[in-house]
Amino acid sequence: MLDLNILSEQTVAMPDAAYQARHFINGVFVDSADGQKLDRVSPSHGIVVSQAALGSETETQAAIKAARAAFDDGRWSSLAAKERAAVLYRVADLIEQNEERLAVMETLESGKPISQSRGECGGAADLWRYAASLARTAHGDSHNTLGADILGVVVKEPIGVVSIITPWNFPFWILSQKLPFALAAGCTCVVKPSEMTPSTTSMLGEILVEAGLPAGVCNIVLGLGTPVGSLMTTHDDVDMVTFTGSTAVGKMITKSSGETLKKVALELGGKNPQVIFPDADLENAADAVTFGVYFNVGQCCNSSSRIIVHEDIADAFVERVVALSRKVVFGNPMHPDTQVGAIVTEDHKAKIDGYIKDAISAGAEICIGGQVLDVPGLGDQFYQPTVVRGVTPDMAIAREEVFGPVLTVLTFKTFDQAVALANDSTYGLSAGVWSENVHTCLEFCRRAQAGTVWTNTWMDGFPELAFGGMKQSGQGREIGRYGFEEFLEVKSLVMRIGRTRAPWVKTD
Ligand code: NAD
Image (cartoon, rainbow, N blue to C red; front, side):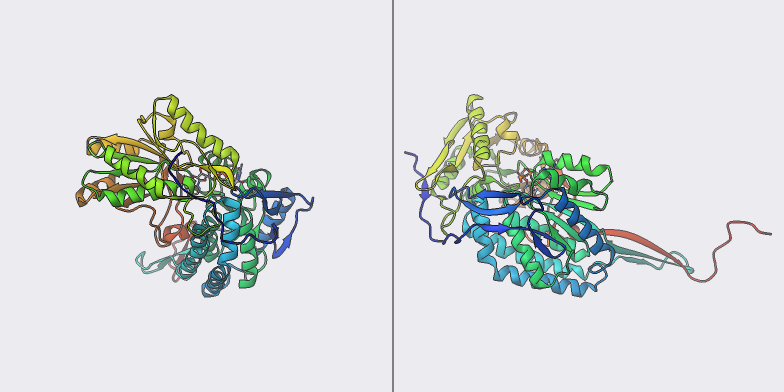
């Protein structure tokens, strides 16, 4: 019997009935014209927890039309920024008031632990507040040095209608990394959540109404990547697409939106390394590695799914991570003590298991886990905490995004080897370094090819700090000032003072 910390008990009450998620178009909640719906079965409890309207081109067209009209008539973009900010601040307050309702639904649809859903949904209010604070800072530059007769002014304008497409792993958080920043800039939006986790986005629609967002400024269409998402990336009336999801779909979106040359911001996958040097605080590092790999069952773009550990300390370090893995609480996500919940779908669980089986056939060694986990009373849509050694950099498990609670261990001898291994990836989302030597850390930070580099920590994030990836982890940045700027166009105004312009056509 594998010695793991499994919790079956449930203390958080289930809702009385499945949530009915509907589209939100031009300020009105509607079902699909053809009446189609999609049931979402809780990955951890096996029961239907929501029924969502399944959108078609009809609803997508209507939502884009509403967003276009709302942008073009200036009902949002021409408001004073402080008025837009006031609405976003009200949304933040209402998110906090609705935290428990949002969190329960997030947990039931995604399988993540309730404590994490509470943190994610309640914490998202801070993103809305920060975006609100930025609304009033969208100023450009003035150029008073272009000659006595010229004044140049660079102004920022909202880019227009933005399509926002989000994944299932952090539905409410990722939505809040995009929508408030687009709204703060003065854009209007069409949002499509993942078909697996539609409800908290629909609930946000209710909050937007209560906060006083004018009709048509944010529209929500529920449904599948095709036809809903694809139309959102090709429609002439959309000016920008911001997408978070898989690298494969991100590449498709780059192509489909290229026809109309939309601006595209992409937050994609990662295969994020943490490099552990022998002089590191190993206790702290082992805990951060354990957190980094099991958080959200490893279904996390920022999962630290690869560690690159100095060979002198590799055995002891892996032993420590394995020991911690046994203590992490896996099980019923509707208990506040649970740290790791269910895998999002049966298919995804099979994909994770496939990576493990392939790695074993290729000669890798399983230090702990490596199998499906059956939680008494809940079934087996769970996966054991898994640590894999004896991995070579060419194995799929060391290169591809497993998106499960699976840690891959590689070792190094020299600093240069560590950097080379860390950068030996098509991805470049995040990386981490553990050492008590400031020079080691600084040099690693400068040489790591990643949008975020953590030093002696993992996954600390702040609304102020830009987030995004290098290489095939994406393009553009989200949150922070840089994320806000993505939603702004730049326009130069050139103004001549007096009649000093020499005629181009000679008339005498
Ligand atoms: P996914 O790419 O399958 O789906 C993401 C969204 O795209 C969903 O709403 C889906 O319906 C939609 N979609 C699918 N096909 C589409 C199409 N042809 N046109 C337009 N939209 C389409 O991703 P997922 O499985 O929901 O999420 C997991 C992935 O997301 C992982 O690869 C993960 O690394 C990535 N992710 C990245 C970040 C980041 O910030 N970098 C954050 C979270 C997740």
